[in-house]
Length: 108
Image 1 (spheres, helix red, strand yellow):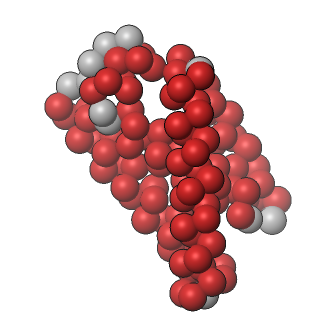
Image 2 (image 1 turned 180 degrees about the vertical axis):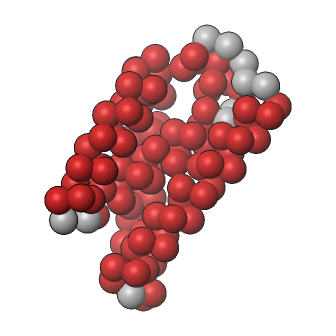
């Protein structure tokens, strides 16, 4: 379950990164419109909120909050590494992560 939450928080952080002008330009080659930037930002925050909700439902409020911040730190590091070394690979990494995380979630 924690690996799937890591994947979903990775996707949420990628959406938040793509909402920014410079990251969106580095990844996709063009600047996002204001409407797209706002939609990506909202989707990213909703993804992070759902990840927190899942952590707290699974482990309770105390341990879920602690594991949530660990998952956030790990996924943020993965997004930073993706943007630093393979920015053009980010959409493919998001798709693979979505497939992998959904598969893990259905198995467990």
